[in-house]
Length: 609
Image (cartoon, rainbow, N blue to C red):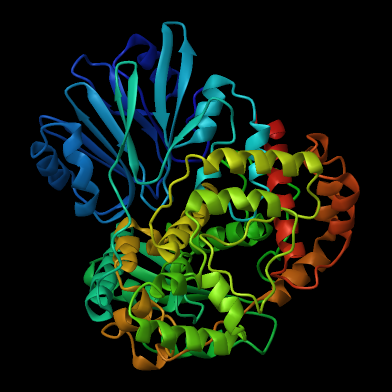
């Protein structure tokens, strides 16, 4: 295959100390960052302007690739403290940011991504003129090209689930394997072993103590991105992006030569509250504010029929890809090379209702107060709550039970659901063959499935953020090609660790919206912004985009590759693409998103050279 350089994406590979490994590294091109004592390449990479690579070489070699502020001198100091690659277990705890880590010692190399899943690691056996070689990379698509791997249609089928549970997460190509987030792969010669280095913390810290740790971690995560002259930060006015902008303003003031660019998009409705909060925040912030008026950026669904090549997996949020790339270009024109977003804030600060299942096993007074508040909001009946709370199924059993419910209705709004994850349902356009395939994989996975935490809310939070983190990693790849690279500080490992360590009953207040965010940001923001209890919704954007770009859906529905594979029913797809969903967040709309994402990705495989 030709060199992988010049693709507009950041990538790296790690190869063993063999002749075959050397052939792979040379075939890909890129820059050799670490080498074995033999002189053969160990780590080779090609990176974008927004990605930092820091290498420290003492008795052992260390490299961090991503969004970091650590210096080469500091990394070399850490390298000198290591005697083997096993000593790297706690190394990520000492470096802020979002990064992959590569450690080399005594001919063994260790590679790990992030615990959040924003940065992932894959491996595959590659055939060369000098024999076979195990190759590790942060890009599954690179390994697929190296091995001429066919698309795994069963993997496509499982991606029809709007929220993919961790046991079903697998690369999209046959022969390419993934390293689980929070684990590392050790490569020595032709052997490869996996080692877990991160685990979900116990949720035991009181809010005051946990909020201070969360604020410090988030502040460090934001400051880490200020290795560039200008950094952009979303400022919607909501309780996720606004704290980022205040922390970014503080970081810009403390770093000579840095400046902040805040960014907002104006809606076409007067019913939104974000604008008022945003205007108030701007009176406290320095730097430049860039605002995009309604219609200035592409509408949702624009360009969704154009194959988006070079992604490791389908992009669930592809309906907004044209607007996201427009934003990246606009911010780059104003000098920004990175773009901080509030994505991930909901996932780590807003507890799923399954936390009540955990509270029921603790202090009864606290539990009753939380259940009473939830029942008042949701209009749950006593008997329905008692049945949901009595559920003692382990994760594997719950997962297996979902196999029989894939085509059933979602639980009624007045029926509480405290399951391990959101109920698993397939879109209405799924064929019986697709349903059978997904059910089979659910039952198989259930036999070996382990919960990410024994506490359902902790498991569900981590499962959700990891599923979404993969999308944010893809968006970073896409935006890096065209302008300012999207970054998600809320999903840095230090930040999610700090959030998950706070007690469940204090992360979910009966009277305060996002209590962890509010408590953490009190020293950093005026109180008027922390009293907000609302969150704007943008269904008007959905319907406006649907009206403007219905032709894109018709294009995708015509001669659909999903239909060709036997996973989608042709008539059902045609009806869906011609209809208008009743609710922008309803099952019909979610099914449309799933179809667009999978169809676009399959077409990209055919279009990608």
